[in-house]
Image (cartoon, rainbow, N blue to C red; front, side):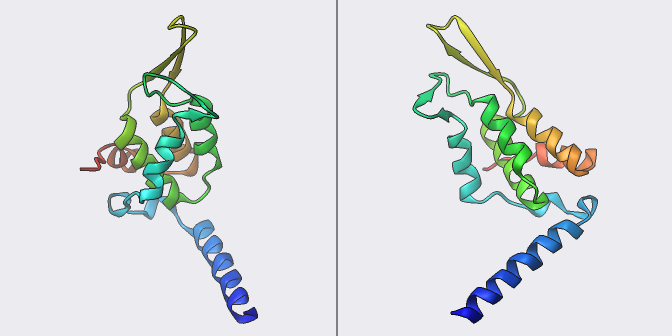
Length: 134
């Protein structure tokens, strides 16, 4: 058991070091595909506790938190593609208070900002925006 744990810890440390040394400009974003888990995370964005918008709009705070917390460039590309597939690049509006209060959210903008901060090029970002699940 100790050998397994030690080798797993080595694997994790090695993976983290690889991600740190990746030059994001060299990543072929076209080849990266979202996982099932990435798509299920899109559903999570529509819920805040037991609250949801009848319009199906996501919560901007949850979107921002997700985009900021992802430090792995490959994972960020996967999630960004899932965002594009689920929400596109347009703004979505959740309504509350009997439709009197608007809650705008633009999932793509948060992920686009995260991609730029991580160092992805405009060409790579445009390629990510072309992704469609079907």
